[in-house]
Image (cartoon, rainbow, N blue to C red):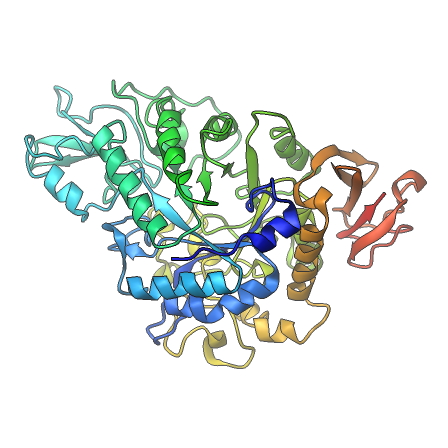
Length: 541
């Protein structure tokens, strides 16, 4: 299958620079993007139908969250067949049509890969649990009980409770860092590595342009099964047993980077493939660097610097950028303010009366960051977090920890397409989650007709980023506060761009030395003489 023609990317970014360096990536949560058959659940043909909208934004690629065969206990992150499409989303032929259409529109296609665990309905696990002598007996993490019958270690699962479940067939415990229906693959086993590399090759041969690898630092555990130490006390509330431990032994094993080298060897055999890892946890920054070091590992990684942040602060932004200097041997970061695992940023960071202006500021800030930027579906519309009542929850983490864990469902609500259509034009049936009245009013149709909408603001910003080398891939030469203004400066081969932000609620007059330059874009009526609340000014010096 033909991939997107890289000729246009080379013209825009230079022949020596890979297409993904500085890319804007649009994440699609398939259950919630567009339903094509009236069952209330988004699907692959629905995504294909709406790809022209995505292309109109000016992004470089789409990232599609899991659509593989799954019992959907964790909504696709519990895979029972890595090489097929779940019927609720369509067929392999539908996927092939999606890839072909995306490439026609100049969009690359990235897909999720989940290598730390499978569903307990995967045939690999069915065989592995059948007895202790089968060919896949060591494909998952099995261990004997302690003499008193208790689990092999004190490890706790992310979703609550022990990370070990007893299985009577083998008379052993199996490890699961998430739901007990998501048994942990034993990635120390070379045969398991070969199997997941075969999965990657299957999708590469179908024409995908890269992968986002889920929970990669959970891929390998301590084979000695040593207990995790207790976590020191903090001022943050602990809502799960998982929060009481330092995750030293159940994840983040030093053999993960050598496995990543095998991934890179495979992807290098194809043209223009991009790989990015999701990395969370206590040691995320160091692990992201290890996973992306040099030219033999992944291309990029992203953490949760902003995804779980309760506030957007200059200090947090500068600290994040400082971890990724423009130096040889240092990897290339990716940034997201929103995704399927975190509440919508406009709801996390701002009160309702400030959100419209703040959403425009947030998008301007995102395009000024050094690294790849990831937009979550609906972020271009300013979608807010929807309050999902308990009886309508689907998120297993939220259900288990109700009401202390904010539901991920509220950030996974259907995309509003049409202002006056039932359910915003998302489905002809009953949607799997409510759209939310506030978000229904922010439809694509309504914003298309408004030149000053956030949707059109986003398009203009992405076009500016692509056309401005310093913003697209330049180094960060300055990141600090000057009085009440936040300043980021970017440089690339003689081009110098200054980005000014007023994150506060009062007008600020910039000092004369900051107000210089040609204005490239102004957000929320900013001028060189005055930056109103939640405004931004980008100038070329």
